[in-house]
Amino acid sequence: MDSGDHTHPELVGGYAHFLPFIYSLPLLFFGTMTALLPLAGIRIADFTWVWAGPFATLQLAHLGAEVIRVESQNRVCVTRRIPPFAEGQGGINRSGYYNQFNQGKLSLSLNFKQPEAIAIAKKLVSASDIVSENFASGVMDKLGLGYDELKKIKPDIIMISMSGYGAVGPESSYVSYGPAQAPLSGLSSLTGFPGFPPMHVGFSYGDPNGGLHGAFAILAALMHRQRTGQGQYIDMSQMETSIALLGDAVLAQTMNGTQPPRIGNRDPYSAPHGLFRCAGDDRWVSIVVANDDEWQRLCRVIGRPELATDARFADLGARKRHEDELENLVNAWTETLSAEDATARLQAGGVAAYPALTNKELAEDAHLQQRDFFVELPHPEVGTRRHAGVPWVFSETPCHVQRPAPCLGEQTDEVMQRVLGYTPEAVAALKEQNVLS
Image (cartoon, rainbow, N blue to C red; front, side):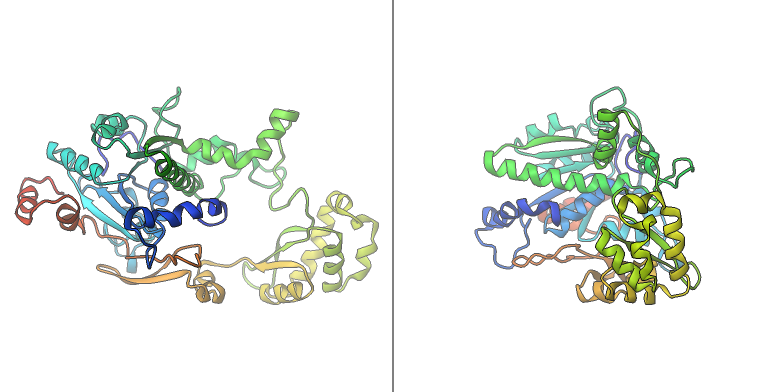
C-alpha cells in the first residue's frame, strides 16, 4: 500500500560516493563533526504514510535527520492498524509494522479539517529542509501544500512526492498500492517456476524499493542544494523505480524482442543454483555453484567425485542442459542432512551455501547480534521490543536508532513549542479548538 486519493494526510553500498557530502553536512550547520550523525541539523516535515514514504524517511532518520511525521487522529496511518500487534492486542500504538518503520521519528498530530492546521503545517515547512509525501498525485496541492506554494514559504525547500505513477502522465491520478507494483512493473512476469503462471513476489516489493530510491534522491537533492543554494521538487514514480530493477529483462525485449522465461530459483549463469530440501520439517539450504572449479568442489563434498568428469555436467552449458538431473543428484544428498550440517560441509569445501532461515532464526542470529543490527528500545505502550536497526556501519560517524517509534501525536507539544515557537498556552488553546488532533 503506497498512496491513495485522500483529501488530507493523516546508505550503504550505492551511497558510498555521497559520503563526503554527508559528512560535510554537520560542518555546514554546526561547524563541527564531533559526535554528530551524518544528517544532524537536517529537518524533514514528513507527510508520508503506509510503507514506501515512511521507509524513505526511516533511512534519513538513521542518518541523523530530525523527522517529524505529520499525522492525524481523523485519518490514522494504515500501518498503525496492521498486525503484528504486541501480545496480539490491537491499538494504534501497538503495531509492529508501524513501530519498525518509524523508529527515530517524532509525531505531530494535526487535524486538516481545521484551517489553522494548514497554517501550522506551513510553519513547519518554513522550519524544515525537506518535505516528503507519498499520496496520490495532486493531494498535497488540494491541501494548499503543493511545491509551488511551499517554495514561496521557503525558496530552498526540497520536496519529494513518491506517488505510484508520478505527477504527470495519463495514469498520474490513479491510486497506487504496493502489491500492484510487482505485476505492473513486469516483475511478476519473471517470478515463478518454469511452466507456471506469473507469481507475486511474496510481499509489497514496490514499497521498500520506492522508499530506498526516494531516500537516495533526497540525498542527491541535498548535495545539489549545498552546492547551489537551490531547492527542488522530486517527482518520483514508484512504478518506475520498480521497472528500474529489471534492466536486463527490459533490454532483452527492446534489443532482441525476447521475453525472459520464468526459471524459479535458478540462474542463467550458475548451476546448480537454488534451494534444496534438507532433513526436518520444511528445512532448506541455498547452494550456488558459479563456475567449473566450484562444481568440482561440490562433487567432492557430496561424495560423488566421478560427477566432476561426467559429460552431462562438464561445464555450465552442459549443467544447464541437464539441470533437472543435476538438482535431483544434489537433493539426494541434502535430504539426508540437516540444513546446518549441509551448510557446514559445503562451506568447508569451498561451496557457497547457507540455510534458509526463519524469522525466529534471524532474530537470534549470532552474526547479526555481534554487529548490533538489532535494537531494543523501551516504547511507552508496548515496552521493549526487538527491531531491525541501522543496516550499515560508518567508521567515523556511527549511526544508531535515536528513539522508538512514536505514539500518535506523542511529540505534538514538543514540536509546537521547540520547533514552531508556540507558547504552552497557545498549544492548549489549539487543542481545545481540535486543531491538534
